[in-house]
Image (tube, rainbow, N blue to C red; front, side, top):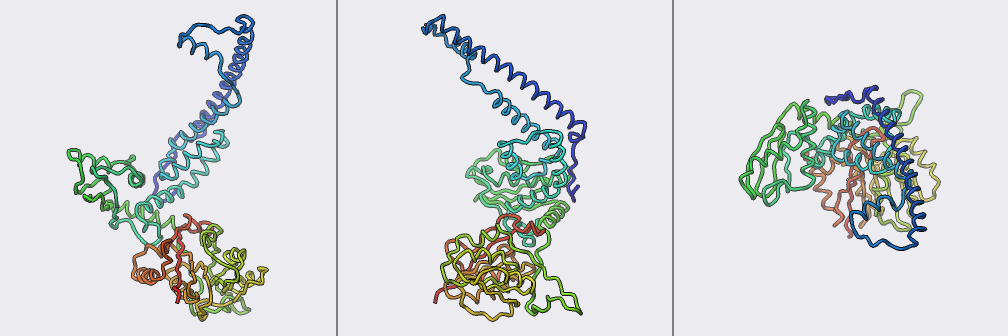
Length: 477
């Protein structure tokens, strides 16, 4: 199972119980097919009766106007009946109900956050997979195997909705005060919005970790009780099993978690989900030859994480590049960003410290690409580039050095875009605050400096840290 999450599959998923479910399902489908066949035969008989009746009434209509009688008669003559269509609709509805039962009674749905549950419900509106023994067994085994990840992802999503600082692997920890805005409406009650569901999910997560029954909604009920004799904004303080909340007249609230052991477990869950930060690439003092194997020493392994295609698409989205412009990619790897840039009519200079990957870059067939095997941090700035596109190393704060060095390569009016860990935007260390203060002087304007990349953009390389794109623009002279 998975760490610190006491979810156990219920007896429902035992083989004998699954067999009973599938047997009942098959019997229901067999009976509905028999019923549909009988209805088809009855439908055909009613159509024959209608044709035969024409020979008797000659096309004349009855003067009877009793509505109840008319309704009873019309039920004998439905407009159309397609047995296959009706059987399939019954099958989809039956299977959706079975899948819902399995997920609810096994406890799997309980560990999902609101988005996971909404996605699941949406899937049940489409082409529902048959709830056969093979399908159920394979799905339950997969979900049980993924239960730890489902749980950790749900916790991470929930807390990141509560406060953006939770999006970072190292930017924020539960236990700090969280400031929530627009929690209460003008009458002093909970606003009807996302915040309620987020708080429900947090209470549900804590209940699971605490080995207790679901306490979702406890905070809302406590506030309602405290305010039951008053209407309108007020200031008060409320403590529940898991929360201490200070409510203010302006509709905001300050939130603390009160159970230290559960706080530890949630922080550990977040750390397990986000994983280690991507390792650093070459420090300033390193040289390309340090990474070339020799007969006397084994080259050190330089950590390498190619930029996923989805992240490249967001990085380049809306970037205005015109024919003949020059673009720099300072940590080019094997060219995932470079290849997309070369689809535009621009010239690209790519820098890569690792000799093997530099050779891969040279293998890209384009007379608009120049490749340098060098340590970018040792490269003297030349402010000749219209754009710099980069995915610098993430570990620690080394990415700050890479971004600031790369900015010096822009010509006036040029634009820099860098894929960075979410901590770049939300971490509150002095180094991060100093970096953001510098970056804000080069904000691109109304579009803003920060743009979220899709969640889990780097999951394919084994980490799930959230990432952002930083955009800076060099002022014109």
